[in-house]
Image (tube, rainbow, N blue to C red; front, side, top):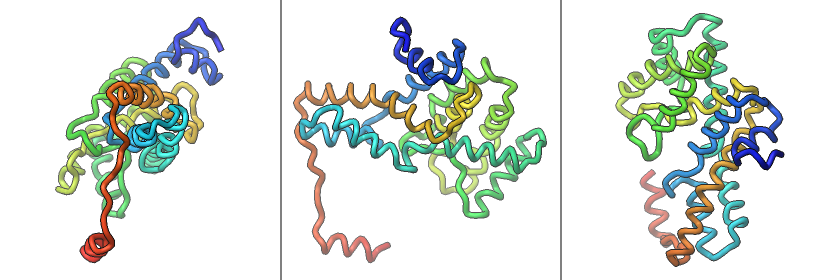
Length: 237
């Protein structure tokens, strides 16, 4: 630990992966971009929910991290990185092109699989966090093979998803590039990425918890449904 460094720079140094200033910079960027989000996502909402009972902030965020551990929430960035690596392997060393990735995306969807890193539960345009990471990658790792592949995916995949008529947002989200940037600097342990995510998200979740206490927001009490209503929903599915 080096107390003379900023929070993110010190965290990057303690990871012991890479001593360069560029790794500290990408860690600062990663922690900043993932620090906060609208309150409807699982980790932020769970932190708010538990905190609304006036639970200790540590308990509240611990609950949020349990939500972050779910594969549909906190595991997205490593899933995207693994998909890029698998795609690169399947291309057999060929230089990726838009035409090549367009067909690959069509084949992937036709096989019943999903393409991770595209779409978002709230956004209906390219995730601005993705744009910031892409600009960083263009400057710092323009020749990285995985970034080149991700860049071609950015051009090829959205039109394929749009053509299905089933996707509200075909554009890439932050997860499509975050893992690629981190692995470039040596953080290749993909299962650890969720931990980095958790370190980052703590700032936003706990800050929102402070605001909730300041505004005196009431305990959260979701509406319940009776058994008849649940049976009716089940039968309609």
